[in-house]
Length: 244
Image (cartoon, rainbow, N blue to C red):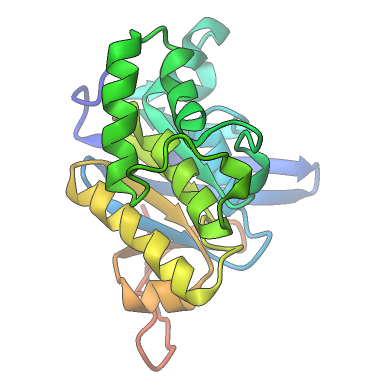
């Protein structure tokens, strides 16, 4: 499974996910994301944005339908293949403060993603230094992560997601706990990652980001996926077509 196997990096094919027998969080959800795209996934709280992302990196599996990464059905991967899948996917969460090692250094937090892969120390040092520079934390390697601000801690989380050069970056409400100015700063980091060739799927309900940085947008409405126009400055958001 490599990122050059298929034209579409990610494909959802008529995906259903139930949390109770009578309630579908996702219902007949279908869409495609091509290599190099930046796609927003939006919808109200509880719409299924996080569930969709969790199924892409195989934290959950669909009840019906398929999710493909590089042409492979992730729901049918053997358990032994799941770690390999996740090496190709960086994930950034809203609750970043619970995901970082607060008592460890900035360097240690980012290096962890490479250490678990058995990367040589020289490679780890080079890659961690470079990615921290790219997210605006150059020179902060020895500082204790828990002493940094919320925005800086989120930058650590982004650096850790990017340090292994994944072809796909998933962001689950990554600006939800940040004030508006910090949120825009963090959103710019995802733009920069995308400009470098990383495919980005960014789940958010932040209309300020959606309108200020418009990209292709997929809304989850009543469990189904709907292509929408990004919100304009007036705040209007118009559905244009069901994703087939």
